[in-house]
Image 1 (cartoon, rainbow, N blue to C red):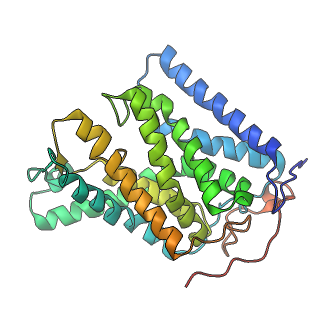
Image 2: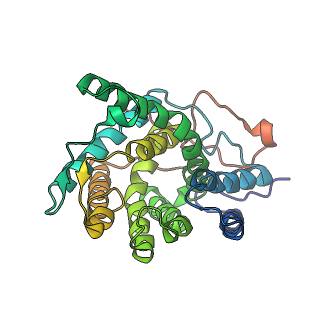
Image 3: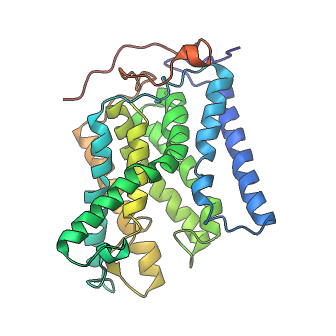
Length: 310
């Protein structure tokens, strides 16, 4: 029985509270189990990534929200490829700016081809980068989807009445706080776990508008999952080298000052070029994977089709 009361202008606070409560229980339960069993939380981080998606799925099924409404559609196919390529120039910019920081140097000894088990050389390096992107867009994207269906699927749909920027801000903040258990046990900022919680929250807030943009333009959550997967995969390789922990973790990294500046610049560019309109209709793709009939008739709002991007 559906009890969804969301409208184009209002947020169903009961559904939203249900999502946040389920997410909190899953998060605390997951971290509690790893603590009791003495399992490294970072090592099982890929499984932890599914908690937002599970929370979103439960809320949708419980309240008769069609999965196709919240982004479980293929949408605009070209964005599947664009999402796989887009992390490369972004991470390249972060690397280039990081190398310009005093105390950070270019690590010419890093051979990505050798890192993935191929012969050394420029040709093989290009092949290796291709392999990394493919792994990110496939295997890694599975875990990225675990997050993205929660953040940019259900939660973006629920918060759509707030508009592009406010919804991105709220999702970015929740996204950042959700990472706190991982950060506190050494993920990304092993030398500065407390500061790292705040730093990564700011990073997520700065990065959230780009994810929102990708989902709206693609009319699907899948490109966001692919972008997430490739970003994480390529992020494992960096040519900026320093022995200074402050520079490495808090400045010259994706989750440091340089990363925040690059993400903020992208958000600024979205703003000055015109951010897309966010409505509950963002996932009106032509190739639904799941419809309202698959989970029960939905009361979710049917709105006018968004204009296609040029």
